[in-house]
Each structure stands twice: as C-alpha cells, then as structure tokens.
Image (cartoon, rainbow, N blue to C red; front, side, top):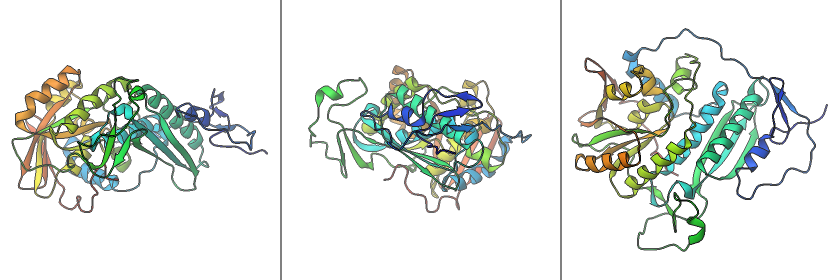
Length: 390
C-alpha cells in the first residue's frame, strides 16, 4: 500500500474524483504560490460523507438565559470542527477573522488584509477527510470571491478533535503598536490603487480603535449589522452542539460582495470614532455577542421583533444563536442619523435592537410586543480576554 498526503493526494469522495488536490486549491489563493512537495507521487484519499443523525429536539425561545449560559461557556473554550457543516463553518471562521480586524486602529480597508489558515486534523474517522476537502474548497471559494489572498496555510495531523483556525493580518503596509496619525508610512501607490477597497499607505495598530465592552449610556443605540444575506440556521452552531440538537441546515455564508460592502462602511465608522464599542458576531451568534459586550455594571435591553419580521418572522432562537457573521456596535444617539445615512448609501441592512442598561449585567430580550425574557451573566463574564486582542 502506498502513502497518501492530506494536502497533495487526489481525492475520491462518495465515488467521485475531485478535480484538484487541497494543496492546489490553497496555492491558487496564495499570491506567489508554493512549490509542490518532491516526495510524491501519492495514492488518492478515498472517503465518503457521513450523514448527520436525525434529532427531534425543539428549541424554546423562552430558554434564552439557559441557552446563553451554555453558549458563553463554549465560546471561551477550544472549539471542535463541526464536520457535517465543514463549508459553512470554514467560511464563517474566515469572516470572523476579518471582522476581528475591523476593530483595530490605523488606516486600512478589507483589501489590505490577508488570511492565514491552519487545520488541525484527525484523518482517522470516516468522513473526516471528506470534510477536510469540503473545508478547503469553501476556503478557496470564499477567499477568491472576497479578493483576499491567503498568506499562509498549514495542516497538522492529530489524533485529537479536528479544528480550523484563521487569522487576518496586513499583507502589505505597516503594523504598529501605537497610532500616530501624523506619521505617514511609505507605500506603493500603484499597487494599492489596484482595487477600490484597498488603501494608499495602509497601516494597522495592534490596539483596538474602540472598546469591546458596552458604555453605560442608556440613550446610546445598539445596532446589529449582519454581513451576509443568508438565512438564520442553527446547523453547526455552538447552541446546536450544546443541546445536541443536531440541526440539519447551516447558514449559507457565501455573499462575498455584500460582505465587502458592509466592511467598507463599518470600517469607516470605526476609524472615524463613531463606534463607541463593538464586537464581532460569529461564534454563538448575536446572543453570544451581547453576552460578551455587557459588563457586571451595564447590561442591555434588546428587542428583536423588527429583525424577526425582516426574516419572515424567523424563530427567535435562530435569530439569536445562528452564526451568521456580522457586528454589534454601540453608537451615540446624536450619530444615529449619520450612521443611518451611511449604511443606506451602501445598501447595507442594519437593525437598531436596543440600548445599554446601566445598573446590572442583565440582558433583557423582547421577541415581540408581549414576550420578553432575561439572562443574567454575572458568573459568565469572568476572565474573558478583550475581543480582537493580539
């Protein structure tokens, strides 16, 4: 029996030969490419997809506090790879890495970033290599659609649970430890004018431009901006994993053009200091973002009825816990009309969902005019690192 390579072998999945190796897909995303290994040829990897076992679990919107406690506990831990939802999870994690960078100081745009990707993979279980191929395919397609290069990729075989990690960083320009707006950085003007969403003389500051924790001003607005047009679905989510719901459908994260539009306007709002606080919405969904944003002293009063109506009166648990990439920001009431105009100008959908609530760490969530539940997070917020910190 010959040897196989997870990256450079050809793949036969469910009896069908795949046109490219994972290594070829990933090298196509690298600006200069990488050499193929010289210790081939390799035997093909043969695997099959494994169907998710059905479940009769029914989500209850009134269990918001309980669900949030479960999800927050998982957000703080290493996340195993949901092999049944490889494509959605991979695209979501790439989006998350780019969104984590949106909060940093400096002057840059989406087109100035690149992504590093690392898979830690257990090749032994049936279905895992099929999931790995699906993950690589999704990474290549999503990065290509975004116009974001892959600066580095790595695969580590392990006997532990499989996982995927992505991180965004500057592929050109300068990364600094502090922000000095008067200090220009030399750059290649021609290169950075290639695309409209790149920047002349980009620079990134490691410190955040705005905090990740809510400010105690009850007149401020909390605004949710989803960065994809997909439906809210719970397949592959931390909540579905926590309650063993085995939801069958995951969000179809694929609208790269819309992500680009959202990123452009949101990044400008962050750079201009309009955003008083902000967090990435991804792992654990909107509910998890709220949980990470509030403090012991300041909670939030939130209503999601308008958000639900915009998605055909979607189930509140899906709206709160589906892992559709996006951001949750806090802005001053005086800036509301300006933010409204900027978002509408770019055709970006946004949802003003509530206000800070000084005095406690409660999050109250109104599903409609007559239904409201609360979640208390006092014991869940200990020891959390600031979002986006290096």
